[in-house]
Amino acid sequence: MSFGSFPHKAYVTVGAKCIECHHVSGKMEACLTCHGKEPKDKVSKLYDAIHGKGKFSCATCHDAKVAEGKKAPKSKTCTDCHKKG
Image 1 (cartoon, rainbow, N blue to C red):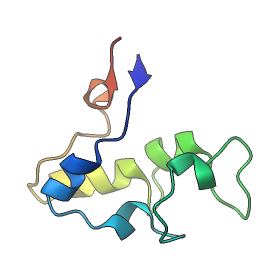
Image 2: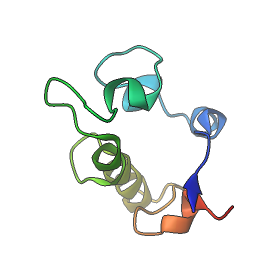
Image 3: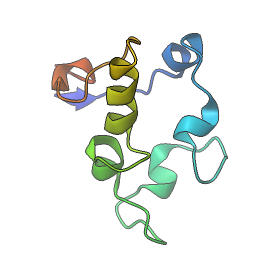
């Protein structure tokens, strides 16, 4: 399985704000710019930023949206983000 390109349009369509993902820098940089192999200044590695349970992780946000009744992939459903191929 792999993680393909990030579907920005899907997030904009549902009303997500850029700052929700680009939470620290506020700049429109790729995730790996901050969450690379050797992150600095107590920044989590990419895997943890996506799968972790921290305040700003993708999984935490997606689970919160689902709890609010909004459409979002559930963090425990791997194939929603990781497509075969």
